[in-house]
Image (cartoon, rainbow, N blue to C red; front, side, top):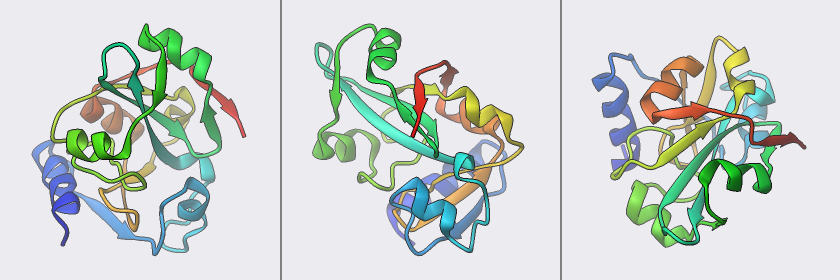
Length: 159
């Protein structure tokens, strides 16, 4: 088991959540993950972890987005309180401990500010990256929000 997957599993156990981790074959994108037979869920039940970097602060911000939505940069900038840019993959790995394509909302090496798409709260269960591009875990959206310390806020548009 990879270090990243182990860290996510440990974070879930530490929160009192029995991990429901599944291998999907490829969960690099929400569409791939939603199509995976192992999951069998709606596209919007996939939690995409989109990582931006504050232009002034250099800190990472996570935008936990429903699979069928995309981040509206103007709304994200308003929430962040500063201009944003796509995070550098090396900085993402160094700060979170995860590579792009497998960034989990939980189990980070260093915590980052996080925002959660209200669309995710409409489901009883959502699926998020479990630290690798091939693994996802199931949790309630409330559990994901609590573990990620994410504020629920409008920052998306539909694909």
